[in-house]
Image (cartoon, rainbow, N blue to C red; front, side, top):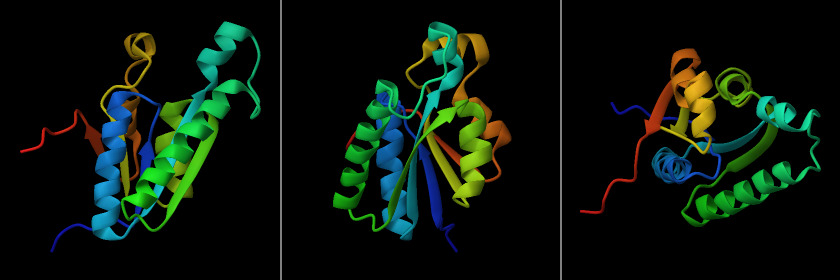
Length: 150
C-alpha cells in the first residue's frame, strides 16, 4: 500500500528551490487528493535587527508574501489541486513551520526547498530545512532541485 498524504504544508520564500518544492507538493497533493497549505514566513528576527522595529501585516515584506502565495495558489488550482490554503505569518521560520503551522493544519507532510534565499542566515544559524527535518512532527520532503524532463 502506498503512503498517501492528506494535509501538506509547503514552505516557500520566492527562491528557485522553493518553486521546485511547490511543484513537487502540487504533484503529491493532486495524486493524493490532499489539502495543500502554503506558508510564507516573514523572519522577524532579521527584520528587527535591521530596522529596530517589528513589522506589521501592512508592511511591504508581507505584501510580497501575499502576492507570491496568491500566484502559487492559482498555479496549484490550475494544476488540479482542489483545496489550497495560504498563510503569510511573522516569526522564526524554524519554529513557525515545523512546530506551529504543522500542528495547526494537521500536516502529515512538510515540503521545503533545500536552501532558500538567505545564504547569510544559513551560514550563521543553520538551514531552515535542516531544522524542519530535525523538529518536525511528520514526514518531511526536502527538494534539492527540479528533475530534468526525460
